[in-house]
Structure formats: C-alpha cells, structure tokens
Image (cartoon, rainbow, N blue to C red; front, side, top):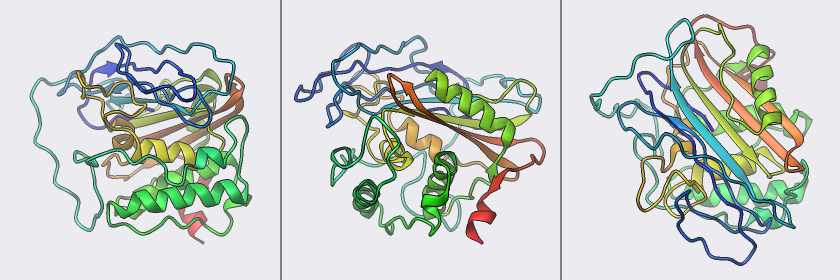
Length: 314
C-alpha cells in the first residue's frame, strides 16, 4: 500500500513471513506474523515520511507453504512536485493538521486504539484463491465492517445497488470512496486510464503502484493487497486491522512508525481538487491468488476519467 501527501519523504519496505494455520504471531526482525483461515500471512508495505524517519531497507519475505496464503498488503508514502518528482524532505516535525470541518470517525494523524479482527471472520466465507463476490462473502465482509465501524460511531457500509455489475477494479475504487465519504473526507473524483494502467501493472507484479513518469502530481498514495478474493476484504485489513500485533510488519513492539500506515493512506487528507485513482486487479498474480492495487493521486491538472464517483451516485 502506498500514500504520498505534501512534504512526506522517507521510504520503508516491510513484509511478513507466512505461518501455518494455528501458529502464534511472534514478533520477528521482519515484523509480525498473522494466522487466519487462508493460512499464510499478510504483508505490510512501504511508506515515505521525512518528518518521522522509519526503517528504509526492510524487505518482503515470503516463504512457500503447502496451503493458500493469507491476505498480503503493502503501502508506500511519497510526496512530489508538479513535475512528478519527489519534493525535498524537511527535518522539522510539522504540527498535526486539524480535523477537517464536517468530518467524523477517527482520522489521521489519530488512529484506532486497537486492531479489530474481522467479526464475523469473512475469511471463512470468502475465497482466498479467486475473485469472490458471492452473497455469502459480501454479507460476512459487510457485517465485519459494520462491527468495526461501531467503534468510530459510524454507520454500516451500504453498497450501491449496482455493486455486482461493477468490475473488480471499479469495486475497489468505490470501496475506497465509501470509507472516505463515511468520515466526511472528499471523495476521489474518479478513475483515470493512465493510472489504471499503472495500478494494473503493479497488481501483476505484486508491487506498490506509483504514478507513471511525467504524470504531474502534488501527492499520491498507493495500496497493494494479495490473497483476498474481494476488494472489501483488502479494505478491511487496511482500515481496521493494521496496528500493533497485526499483520503490518512495519508495526512492531520495537518499531511503531508504520502502525496504521495502510489506513492513513486510504484516509489521506488531500484536497481532491484534482484527485484521481488507478485501480488494478490480477486474478492469480500473487502465488496463484488475486492481487489488488490502487493508486490515489492529487494531480496538478484535471485528468480525463473513465469512471467517476459522480457517475456512481447517479
């Protein structure tokens, strides 16, 4: 998962070693392991923060297992200039931005006090090996999201009536905006073809997406997830189970700089004057399981859209 906002600057890669079902989640030098119904583990990602430096050379470690891998995630934070290149980092710690007027729930730089493991455990209802938009999977995942949102005093998530007519990529875009809108943040305007291509390439590479060369941006954010069959599952882990003792290996008892980094990405406090998104989905790119990637960009100029949030509201 990746995000880039304003003057943030230092990159850190994180990962998670898969574990067998039933094993505990010990702390390791690379991070924390997690156990779920799919087996394997979730992987963390990269973030860039010039004001809060974090480890810069953590590498992803994935060891083959004789069973399905569990959800896997990455993130990155990257700032930039209008030319699309990183902005100079600044050593000073900026004051935390005030919570925007009209917002609700918990917003960065604040984070939830604890992880909320999915309840019900949708991993038992959804396929981890292929795209799964079944009624059983959706019901379990939405119930888990509703349960987690209660801790923020937010209503349950309501999917649009045409949800199952959307492509997997469009569903990922809509899920992102549903989480932002629930907290009063401006919605990402729409999906841009050039960013879709970048996100799609990242999904096939099991990698964090980034804006293509020459694409002007003020800030950008990218997310990656693997071994989950529905984008709502990926969104759950990014939003509600990303703190200490979670699968986020950039968040440990000795290094908490990356805790809740995935959630911070989804809820990036950007103006959305020209914010657009790229969405990618690869059916079996992550060890034979689905791979997802999203790229949120505050562009310097308006960008042609292939699918918009306004269009989805009509």
